Length: 536
Picture 1: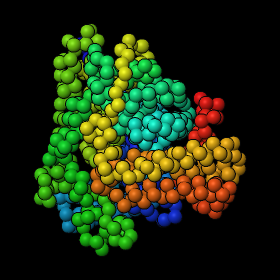
Picture 2 (picture 1 turned 60 degrees about the vertical axis):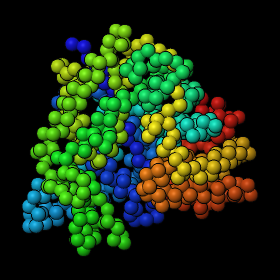
Picture 3 (picture 1 turned 90 degrees about the horizontal axis):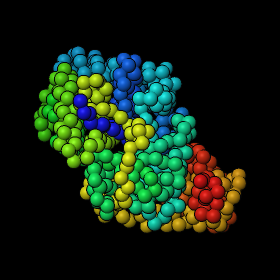
Picture 4 (picture 1 turned 180 degrees about the horizontal axis):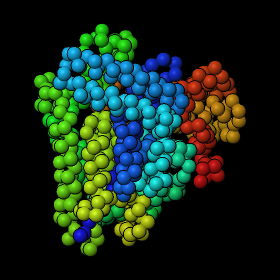
């Protein structure tokens, strides 16, 4: 039976948020929620498949900012505190629901059990570093790991500053090597943002392939013979694996599977529903309500009127949706096979990892059923990874991939919608000043080198596309503005001090403690005269 090759690629990313100056920091909860509801459950599911000798394949990218936070001892301890607090809440919820809300007691028990399993896995199995779990899956051959840029920068916006793009790529690869001990073959471009010429930068660093937006292939000036159903290569011999938009949208859209009314409602949470006096020990000061993860309602319909969530019905529905997804992949292959001149169709499907478990509670089960089905002999699909595909040495058509992204509209609309364009002149000025500093003060040592290295760190973090994304979505705008302005102010402080040939030691120590990402930073990455010698 002819099978359709499928490459599932999950991208895990969190913006760098680390504030040791506070005992608790609201936005650090984004990381803790993702570990608790997505990363640990996904790891547990994948390890269970390993134990049952399921021959699945999956590609996973963990962004450098996420890698840094997952390895940070302070954040690891805060995550343990987060689990302890939510375990205490779970115990109280089981008791409360038994007395006041019988319809919710079973889910309260499920949440409590999951928290306890996560705490056991985190502290005892992974010794607080879950990257060891991903490395084990990588070494077993089931999961391929790929790298990404240093701070989730949307690279097409910086094509006029190739040295800054180089810095993002090199630091991203360095973070991957530090975490997993090997060089990556694949590279995730944030939002699949590509511009002509970027392949040359990637090729110099030994990258073999990138996941790409469909527009990169479809809008190429060359006619692509196989559309988005086979990989192609760029002039610099980088393989492009274009996303199948239609199949992705069956899951990742307003009308996708996660919108089914039997699934759990994400936004209805006891952190906002229950009495403030009861919730006060579990929320942030001063009385800032937050998501707790304890959610007892099904999506039902739009509006506040909801029915209680039924886990049994939801699991039956998610199995049905996984089967339907496999069927749609098979039908897509059957449709396009006659147009591929004997080549077998291949589909590339990308998702944010946080969709599974966090945003879509049943998503981990959906992923499990896909991997189980795709690994069986009777399945109409064959699970693979881009690395495996390239190892078979397929003949790839050479094209010139187009400027593209998988953001709304396929180009740069999200990051250039007008709400954030004011920021780019400041970031670009920072890049120009960083190049100036690297040229004026080459080969510094000791305190001045640390000072300049910190300036480069702050600039990398300012380049993050996360801040623009918050502005575009009209969500957490004050936080995003504060983060951006803080990174730029820190950078400018270094610039102004170095222009006076001075170092603010007290500030440096404080700043290094907080923004401690990229420990191997070398500010000479912005010095064009020494760049090739140091980094190629």
